Length: 72
Picture (tube, rainbow, N blue to C red):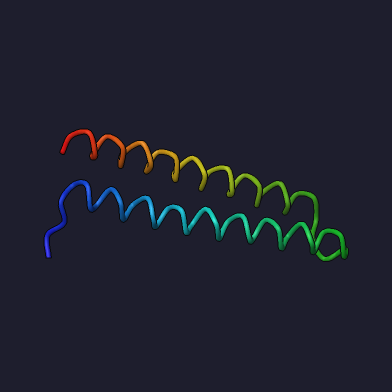
């Protein structure tokens, strides 16, 4: 099955959205562990950076999808 550029861009958005949500969940879990003394501040900072990076990738995918929609 061959995907159009628009379909591929849509899939990219969905995949990156899932990754961003997973990163947010992981960050929340580490924040919870920090309150219980099972994680360090450095670990929380690392997970926040991962969440930010995942969000940036998601935003780029959204922009790519919008461009693909205009190009149709």
